Length: 322
Image 1 (spheres, helix red, strand yellow):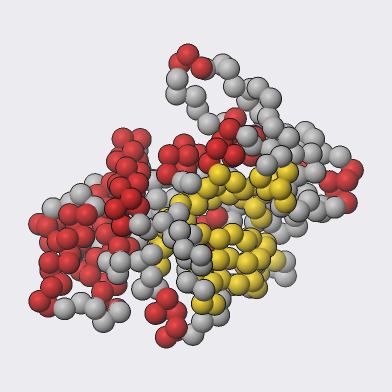
Image 2 (cartoon, rainbow, N blue to C red):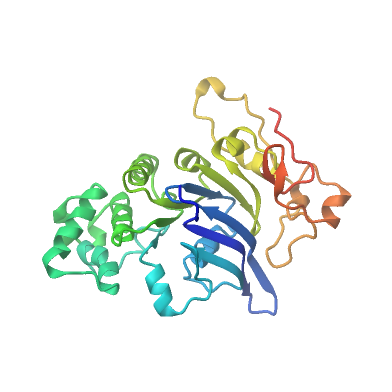
């Protein structure tokens, strides 16, 4: 891993006006780093701000504040020319593999589009490059002549991955890349992503609510709740030694696949008031559903600092008991 991270995000904020004079605090002060060849999983409930964070990092959305540094260069408010140069090294795979592909374009043209935009498509080698990318993601060269509707959902996602790889990026942002797929196809795509990271040395920002997929794919994991990171650490830290109550509740909802272990895990059922990103609770944003909440939690905001071995934003961080 190089000394300079591929991606550094510092106190990133993205707010939206709701049209009625209020502000939706979708991303509210998120920081993390991602090294070369490393995979960081970002997990949390739907609506916690994961996809907004992904789109803001790659500058599909304009940040409200904070900093985004790619290869050490600040791209937070980069102009179009600077941003185009940065995007040669970073790409994104979207959640819906059909909506992200132009239905009027053949697969080969879809994959060639980044090359054409960046002025790197050459007649002599263009078709060979498309065939190479199709082979990389497990498709045949002949598939280049088909339209998106002629593919299965899993094949369409492979086309999206091939397009993202066209410019040989260092960073791939994966925004719920397997959530729209059935179980067997999901396993194939995860295996493909693992192979690509090993062979090409890509860095992944893997965004998902599927905790099992993140466990299989990622070196480190950050847990996001209501626009903020509440716990982060290695895969072992988060899955075996979670200390934040929110993380513990998320993990307790993961299905146990081994019949011999079913019934051995204590299910945590959250109650209380669901917080809003428009008017988040004072102090700890999870306190309205937390069984450990105390008066201090409403008065102070817990910092994401090392507690019991890894960062956790909870005053009462401790290992879960089964």
